[in-house]
Structure formats: structure tokens, C-alpha cells
Picture 1: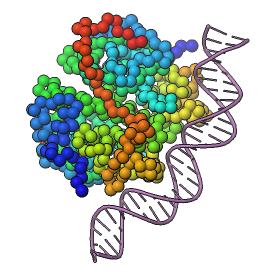
Picture 2 (picture 1 turned 90 degrees about the vertical axis):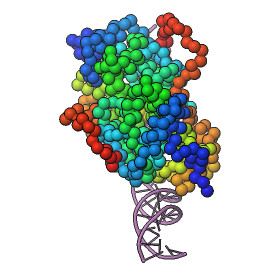
Picture 3 (picture 1 turned 90 degrees about the horizontal axis):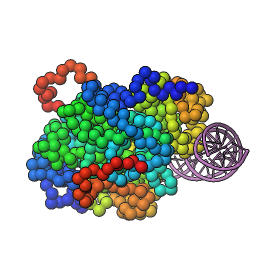
Length: 264
Length: 264
DNA sequence: CGTTAGGTTGAGCAATATCAAATTCGGTGG
DNA sequence: CCACCGAATTTGATATTGCTCAACCTAACG
């Protein structure tokens, strides 16, 4: 059986170009910058490798080309909370702050491969030579913020079942834009324990919630492959909606700004 | 009785300059830009006023000069989750994305006053004329991200008591940098219901947790004024630590970047 | 003074955690 | 191919946290 995690007729080095072009139109030159990065020799990491430590200084940024990682915080009593999962096409250690310290520890969830991208930090701030790429990186950062807000809402006000439904749809949405999910089915290389740390639940409860979803015919999960069989039902349960980053630049706005804009 | 929320010998229009100068050194000109903003005629808002709606387009950014607001998401069944609280000195509707839509609804928690700051969006991107101010705004955004991560950790993996302790210390930390908390005591103009929506708890449980903290002599809370009587105990319970935004620029870094940086 | 929003209390219950013991799965060496 | 090992998953029983519902109290305010 084909693995189906990637459209067959796309070159293997177009993950980044595909992803960022969906956020903002890219010039041929900009796509080539991304292909150059993705074509570099990869670093391999096994599961549980620490890629970046909390409060450590950032190193050269990397892009994930395969495998999943997690950004997490650790608490006393062996508790840990996964802040976000990093998927192929996501960056590790990318920021424009000077001499920044990481707010989270980044740990490989599966075996994974990364490519160095030392030039990307500068590109992000270069609105002259790579304006489209810089804009795409802005939008990726905005999406990230949206997903953090989603995560807060999930953890604060949704039940275990709702949380899981919402999170599955979010991951599906993120993978889709990279060509890594087809029809709601994708590889999900993480243990139920990691899932528990992401969703703020116990492993046992994650297991039982998964089984309920299986019983109801909403998902299938075997050997690290998740299929969302009834996305409509999941969407309804989890109240998921994708990020809307910008308003349509509908009618050309009036040349003069509206007088006396009010907050009321 | 004096309210004691503001150091007596500072001009009333220096809130913004004080706050941002603590994040990054500001030139006299930059401080004046902030004073100009803060000196403008204020908009007044009563509690529960919606200042910005989710998925609505941003308007002119404002700075809060007094009172608290909240950014929140609403879910079915009347549930709501407060994503973050906005304190005096915080901006509303500030972003550099083009034609952005808000990810949250912004609602006044108390009566409040805001000042328009139409020029701040441009300033944020102007590293030539106001480099210090732009850097300070970057750092404020970084702090915000840190607090979102804190919030995720609280909601996902901390008990009601721990959450509350951690959150109180975070608010105290934020108010301190604006001169609005002295010795761990400050005005906290929000109801227990709002507190519940922030901490992902029921009102009843918030009430009981507050009383436990009072019984243990760790806080005092009357007429909207919170005193953290035993910050050490609260810190220990809530495992709070403040953001560390940047590494000390210790030794001058080598002119040539370190060869072959590795992720391992 | 009556009204009302916010705060407090008690009782019972639901969701989720914890603990402990299987069972299954994916390798791996013989 | 088989036996074995450790990790991951599953199951059952019980404990706990925090929720819901309903009532009552209190202080601020017109």
C-alpha cells in the first residue's frame, strides 16, 4: 500500500515552497531559496532527542523535513505540557529577537530530519529582496499564534472528547497545507502519552477517548496512522475553525482614512 | 484612603514610557512619542464593552491608560475562555500584518480608558527613526508569547490552586514593570466569574480556592484589591518564573561564526 | 430601603486521575 | 521462523478534583 502522505508528482524538495507559497505568493527566486535550504544535507535525530533547551540560546534555525517534534514545558512531579507540535515544514529556533532564549524545550517525538537554514532569519526581515517570503513567514507566525490561542481554549474550556476532536482537525489542517494529509488521513508519529501531554489529560483517559471515537466510527488509528472518518462530526464536537489571517482587500479603501474612528 | 496603585512622584502620562523603557533603552525622542500618545484625549469604556470582535478587521490601535480588558474566545453552551488580560500600558489591536483579522474578542473587564496610537504600527517597523521603541515593542510581543505559553501550561497541567498562584504572580510581575504594583499589592478589577474564565475553572471553585489561599494567609482580597502576602509560598506552589528574553551579550561574539554548528 | 450583581455555602454528581495488572505490538537475537 | 523483550496500549477498580445546582448572604447604588 502506498503511504499517501505526499502527493506523488511533486519533487521531494518542495515541501517548504509548497507550504509558504500557500501563505503568500512567492517569486521563482524565493521558491529557489527554499529549495536550496531543503536540498541541504539533513541532520537526523532519534525520538526524545532534545533539539533546543528551555532558556538556552538559539542556534542556527532548522526546518523539519520529516518527522514530528514538540515544544514543551516541564513542571514538578514529572508533569509536562506540550505547547505545540512541530510538523514537517515547521522551523525550529527561528526568531528575529537578538540573542533570544527559548521559552520551551524542543524534543523529537519521532525520528526526524532537519535542514539548516541560517539565511532565513535575515530573509524574514528583508522586505526588498524577498518580500513574498518575508510576508509568508509573517503569516506563518500569525498562524502559530492562532494555534496557541486554540490550544488555550481547548485546555481551558473543552472536554477531553472535544479537545481531541478539535486538535485532530487542527493537525489535519496544518498537514493539508503541506500536502501531508489526504482526505483526512495522515501519519501521526506520537504515542498516547505524548498525546496526553499535548491535551492536558492522563494517558488512560486519552486511550478511552480514542476508543470512544473509534466506536462511534469517527476515527481510525492504527500503527501510527490516523484517519478522520467523519470530519463533519468531529468539527461539530470540537468547534474547530481554521485561521482567517486577513480580510479580503475588497473595495479599494478610501484614500482619506475614515474620520474620527471610534472604538465603540 | 490612597489607592497606592501608582508611584506618587511620576507624571501621570509616563505609563507607556516607563513600561517600554524597561524593555529597551529609549531615546528622549522615543519617550516623547509615547508621552504624546498618552497625553491624547482618552476614550472611556464601561465594563463589558466590546472593543474589538473576533474575526473583525483591526481599527486604529489603542493603548490602555487605565482599567483592565480581556481577550477571549467563546464556545457553545455559553462557555468562554479568557486568552489574556490586558493591563494599563498594553495595546489593543496592534499588529503589523496587513488587513489582519482579530483572533479574539476584546472586552472591557472594568471601566477603562484608552488613547489612540495610529502612529505606533509604523513605529514598530521603523528601525531607523525609533530603533529603541521598535525593539521595545518586539520585546513586549515576545513577553506576550511567553505569557501565552505560561497560560497553556497552567491550564493543561496545573491544579486550580497552582494555576491561581501562578497567575497572580504573573499579573503582579506585569504590573510591577508599569509601577502599578507595590510590594505585591494591586487593584484587580475583575469578578470571580472573569477569574474563572481566565483560569478554566467554575466560579464556585474559584471562590473556594481563593478562600483556601486566604485561610493559609497567602493572599488578601477585598474590594477589588489583591495583596500577595506570601509570594514565596505562592511561587513555590505555582512554579512561576518571569520571562528571560535575551542572553547577556557577555563576551563579544567571535567575528567568524562558530564552524559547523550542530543541533545535537 | 428595595434591587441587583457579586460573592459564599452546602450537597450531590460527573469527569478525569491514579493505581495496578493484563495484553498487544514491533523489533531482535537465536 | 520462533522466542523473547521492552514499550505501548488496553482494561478494571477506585479515588479525587472540580462541576452543577440551588440557596442564601452582602454590599453598593439609585
